[in-house]
Image 1 (cartoon, rainbow, N blue to C red):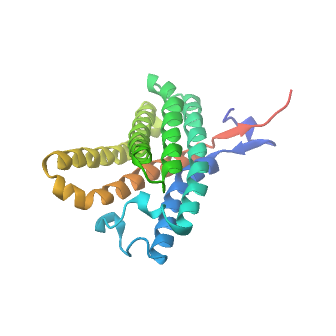
Image 2 (cartoon, rainbow, N blue to C red; image 1 turned 30 degrees about the vertical axis):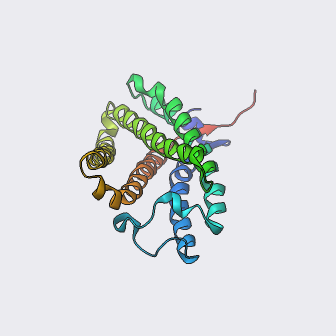
Amino acid sequence: MRTTQADRGAGALPLWGLALAASLIPLVTIHTTYLASAVEGHVPWCMPYWDSCTSISRTGRYGVSYFIFKGAMLPAALLGIMFWWLNARWLRQLGAGGRGIAWLPWLGLVACLFLAAYTMALGHAGDTFRFIRRTGVILYFSLTFIAQLLLTAALLTLPAWRDWARRLMRVCQTALAIGILSVILTTFAYGLYSQIDDAFEWVLALLVNGHALAVAWLWWKSDFRAQLRTS
C-alpha cells in the first residue's frame, strides 16, 4: 500500500470510505435502535445525551432493534479491526514517529473483539451474559481511547498535521475528563451517578466515534489509498 502519485491510477482504491463506515455505522446504529425501541415502547422518548433516560444497551435488547443492533454492530467490529490496522500503516507512510504506532493494530483488534462479545451477549439474561456485556463495553471504550490517544500523539510528531492533532487531542482530553468524573461520582456520589450514568455512555460513544470520523477526513485529506496489483 502506498499513497504516492503512482497509486492514483487504475486499481488505486481510496480508503477513507472504510474509515467513514467504521465511524458512522456504530453512531447511526445506536440512534436507529433508540428510535425503533422508542416507537415500539421499549424505551421512553427523550434526549439520552442529557436526560439519561436509557442506556445504549437497552435500545438494542428488544423487538426489531435487537436484530438491527446485532446486524450492524458485528460488521462494525470487523471494520474497526481493519480501521486500526490501516491506521498504523497510514501513520508510518506519513512519517509519524513514536513506538505506540505498533500497538494500534493490537489495541484495535482486542477492543473490537470485546465489542463483538458485548454485541452477541446483548439481549440475553443471566449473570454470565451480564458480565460479558459489562466487561465488553468497558474494555471496548478503554482500549479504543488508548488507541486514539496513541494515534493523536503520533500525529503530533508531524508539523504539517499538528493543528489537526491538537484538535483530536482535545477530543481525547474531553473523553478522559468524562471518564475521570464518572469514577469520582461512582466513588463519592453513587446515588447521583446512577441517575446520570447512561448519559455518560452516550457522550463517550459520540466522542469515540467523532474522533474516528475526524480520522476518516484526514485519510481523505492525505489521499490514503490501496493499490491492487498482480505480479
